[in-house]
Image 1 (cartoon, rainbow, N blue to C red):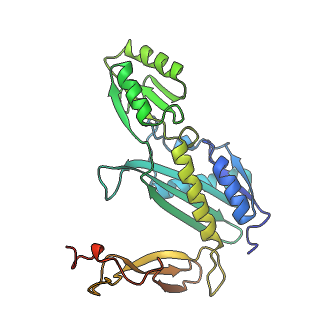
Image 2: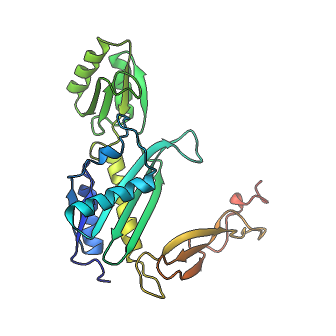
Length: 280
């Protein structure tokens, strides 16, 4: 499919996401991708809280994408928005949720992918000594992953971001500790300072490209993809329905064509250990 081949694609980012997205999108979609840093995406809110994030992630990612396209005059664009917090079902586990949006004005297309990962170092703590600071730094993968030091959690005062060396870490800690009883240390979740997040964004880029290349069987519009699931895969022992996925529902955003794909995980029965009847 040559819908995207040879076209310019703008990635609206100030945090270096093009380093992982450019090669993936160029290889899979055949586009000529480039970063646009002219829009301060932090104006929509920051992870570290100096500016409140007022838009929901879905609205924010679209706003970024459209702004980059408007500013550059390019009709094909991509943007990303991430968030961090407790996993929606594994409540005590931190997770990274990412949205990646592609907008194609020429063909009136909007393709979105979203995913959640537990592979994140997202964390923070108050420390009062170098030893406590060192323990935290080692646990979260410093110096490969940068840190933020500040007066207190959520405070916009005396905040130092993007710390990537031991010397700077200790120097800033001493400076803050001379003024306050404790120092708040947290992981810097901006993509260019967080390899774990950048890797996840790259994986999401592949997912987006594959979705963009998936054509509707009826009208050939890109983005024909999963919009729902049907659970009820039968138990291999008792035959009763389980929570295993029996089928996927796929649909086209343009013509509305729908299709049900059975046994998407290449199995037609579920292990009894996952059956609520055999293993309650």
